[in-house]
Image (cartoon, one colour):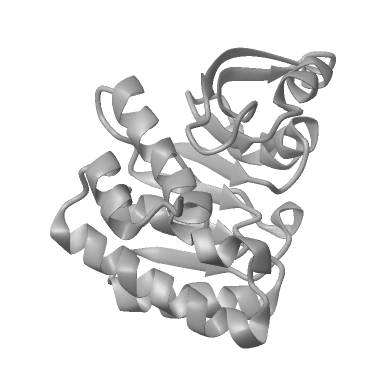
Length: 208
């Protein structure tokens, strides 16, 4: 069975305003996908599960983990905007989307304008961006954890910045590899959209 808009609303309990924003996002994705191939074609018919709820579950887990939600987010390898723009629609105040593909950046810019969220689109590779202050770093289906830590190091500084990663079935192997080079506290939460996938929370991150 396809996971519907109604399923999304009942599972996330988002407001009607937020749902309307995300419906507009989904409509744009379906429209642009025909010409721009922003996401895998095999996921379009089930986008409310594969993309929107997959991203939204991150926000839900953050709300359970933080006393106060982070204000500024850096999303690495944003693609068509997942999870960063969904998190922005759900309540993160400032989102920075990093994506080297120009057509995907154009799409995200239009989505952000239509949803009325505060999003900065960086059409650049993450390693070429001068670091700035962020509260949280996210990424979904972009690179292995070790690589994401390398890219994130300039932004981590000495503050309590956390990383929240949507990872597939190799997440535990990736964590083991990363711990060869880094020390960190970690938590793993089972994904609600894919068997064997996880949400990975990392903090107190330091290179060995």
